[in-house]
Image 1 (tube, rainbow, N blue to C red):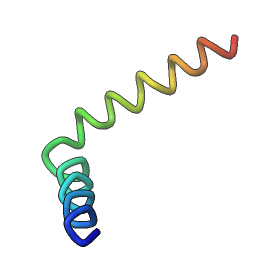
Image 2: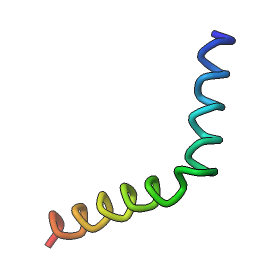
Image 3: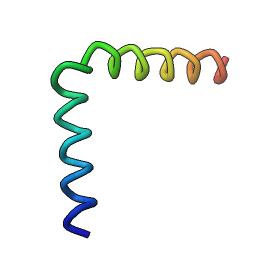
Length: 39
């Protein structure tokens, strides 16, 4: 369990840090796909 927590923390740090642009692009594309699906 401790290892899982460290892995999640590392992934979150990477998303917030150097991979923030990539993460933002993924979220943005997911939200626009969701909007297109609703309409």
